[in-house]
Length: 516
Image 1 (cartoon, rainbow, N blue to C red):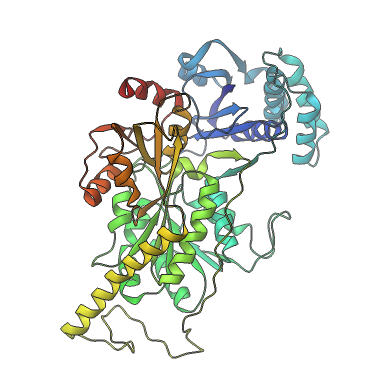
Image 2: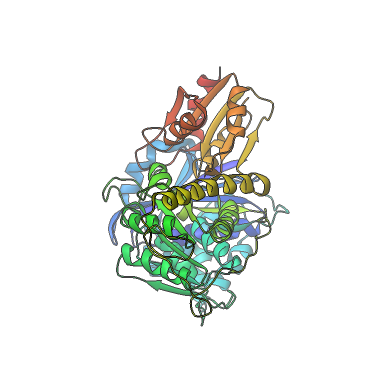
């Protein structure tokens, strides 16, 4: 069973609230949801919409075709009427416009009735969310009474938890004992900063544990990266984060990390570019820059989770590895992963715990600089020491690769594990691929570590009869990386680069003829 509800209107009309209420209701009723947010770079007006996908089994994507359209304005109807299925319905927000701010809870009532969920489940959710809930309850009842029961969802025994990618970044970082997050706001990385700020003393959310973390907004991305590496030098667990344009500005500091070997973890949330690009939309176009940003040759780790559970795990791994190997770790996400809301019953793997066990200024005499140095930290221009230091940095990369291979998941396979049809992808696109290949003769190879790259990838490709690359960029950046490391060029490619992610039904229709 799978249903898709699109809720559309102008920025500022509370579209997110409708989908949030309904998602919580569905989770308590035992259903899995995936909530996709599509919004313009506007505070008021324009056209925004959420597509909420519902299933009785885990899902990580949304469909192009919809079953129910909730329209808070006329533009929503014009934009989405062609996506409405033949037996689909439209619920108009205007019928509740006299309810003011309670219009959204009335619409949640209409949707709850249409899905066949009892009113009391919704009313309990409203009471939990609103302190003064009497008027909201009345609005909920009015919305419930206005609609017919179209579906008959039965209560399931699942108890999924709903998380966004941004919330998962915060959880993974807190699990690892993060002490400082310093950043300058840039969509879509900003929400991770907001989520981490909830953990500060005093907490803004009583349900969150109190921690010693400090979240600081720097004046720009250059300052953020510099502050982060400075605090790491002082012995703190630190992370910084940004999107593409801000990451460009951090490049010099990344190179400083390479030679100083001060641990640094960077959260890079991609959006459509170059330049300012399409700032509130998604892309997987920054893999190249994540792999190579910063001058000179030095080791780094680039990890790309595909859902919030993986994001919790890989964030913790990135922080752990940065400290263990005194290196640069980059967590690669994007708008689609960062701002979509996933539900899951899975639990993240155990967090790799670590302590700061290197010499710390104030306790030891420590010298670091951007110059090539001898073993005591003294600047040198010796060609023998320069060559030795370069060799040590290259060897470090080999040590990192061996350690990750032995301790962490570098790839995952999904679907028909015996299939000779191999689909390769990474990051947020993995959700649509996993949903699209259900009931297809295909195996999906999900790449989690882009650097180092798993040697198993070459074996999987060599054992397949047909290989298809799926990415949300125009040049197939993962495919190019695989060719660089294995010598194998993937000719069959499905690339999407209009700022929007793949729909699972759209992707399935594209894959079927390619798999024949």
